[in-house]
Image 1 (spheres, helix red, strand yellow):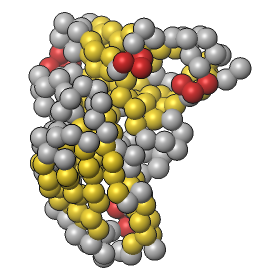
Image 2: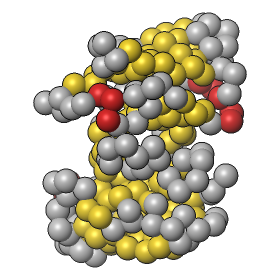
Image 3: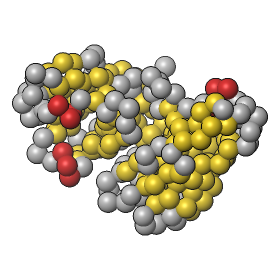
Image 4: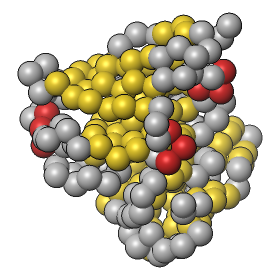
Length: 122
Length: 107
């Protein structure tokens, strides 16, 4: 079964860091770029960045530069997104998503993880 | 960054109605546009990519059109399961950006 399985919900204090994992299965992990997108409660989508599992190259949205790090582990077909210096406005559901076309970096997302709720509260 | 503007923000329609949703880009995105459906509490579902290529499993009552800065998502005969939020997304230029969404509600 082709799927992306994300780690569970997190509750963090302001200033802390959070790492969300996204495990791919059912397809060749290194063939498809993975993006991270977040959605604050009741809001739209905000793109955070992209990682190419084949080689690990990344590109981050400017507003997250210096706070976000995306990595991958090809041995477990898992990508990770770490966000540091958390603030209350980082409270959101974080999604990993796979592009629809193999080897295409920037494309639409046809496969989404179930989302990971990250709550930042003191 | 490219700003994506969707209209209307919401609309109330009846089952069986024809619905047309609009998405406008602040600069040309060629055909590098996706449409998504999101039912509250659920994961987004890709409807179209390349502006008009229907994703796997999407019913034929959905159609996508447009290029450059003007795009349209049409539902020819609204079914009960189509009441949801719809988002457009451009992936033509970094950073990827999304529209604010259109909520399709039951009249």
